Length: 197
Image 1 (spheres, rainbow, N blue to C red):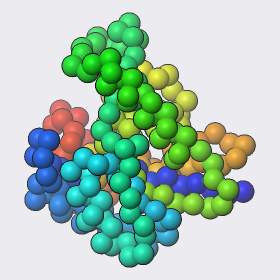
Image 2: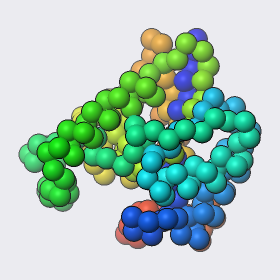
Image 3: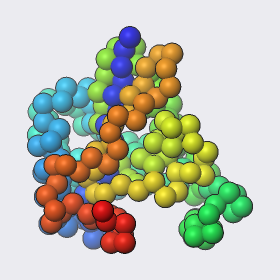
Image 4: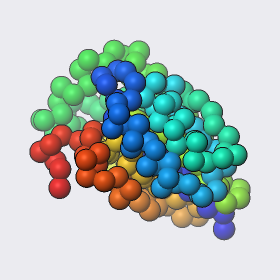
């Protein structure tokens, strides 16, 4: 039975809508070391600068692995739940997104699922350097949770999540937000301090 192992990495810490910070570059370097030796068939990354830079640093540790930019790995809202489906704390979370942005995000998320979140014909390991929202959406999908549940599934910068897809079986969450490769000074970025454990 063929296995598709989908490795998802959230980009490193970045200045707001800008390039990686020094901590973000270190996170990416350590993530590259952590993933070195994994026989990836390809590395895809978001076109957004912080993800593209993270992917470039990781790719330096993966010689011979093809690297490609993909809008499917971009930073978008995969689904806007009806207000009544959301916990009160999240009721206004997506208010700043237009109907067009929401529709485009939903289409990209559906295409990302079709491309990455399904069984393969042969054993395959793929790496996608992306953003919090897409990782949350794919984890939610793998767990067969309600669509609204993607909100609140958060990852640290350069956390590694691995999903497995096999014919005749439901998807499996093998690893979620693994940051064992990140030392304490660069470990908790991307998550509010109140949620550090």
